[in-house]
Image (cartoon, rainbow, N blue to C red; front, top):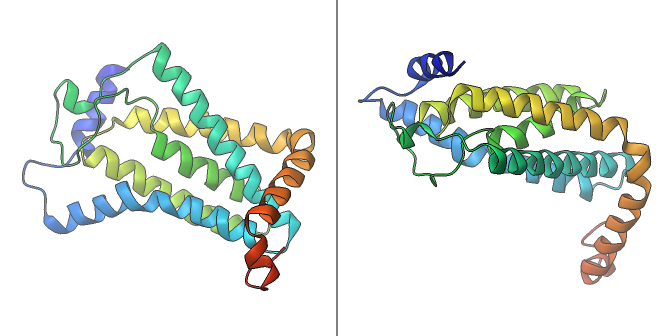
Length: 198
């Protein structure tokens, strides 16, 4: 398995003299694309539709739970990043921590699967899944992850997002009430002025 991982990494990793345009695209995907996830959750929450709010909360639960699983895996089994071996070419500074599974891929997958499970927002889920593929490519291309780090994140996060959807009836009513209460308290001045929805 490790031999396959290294072979795929060698195929996807940037060459010694990568083009500036390709590197800029990789940087945009590897560093900034992930911010679309919290932005999506905030936009979903600020809509007056309780169903959209619950969907945003379910996405948040899936992200946090999957990242928790990642932390446990990282503590139990620390896998070096490419530049720690060292192999390939590295174009992005990163802490020398465990590479498996990828947290970036975990977050984008949790959001994509949550959206794909919503009939109304499935097209947006397809877009987020495509962004996820771009993030996976970019972080291998820039030399901070192996391909199997991405596959592991996809399997873990996808499973957790499905589980969060199946168990929603058990945690969502209380979580939604709590979140709405916090929203009203924190944003009361803006709500009173009509600048923010209740």
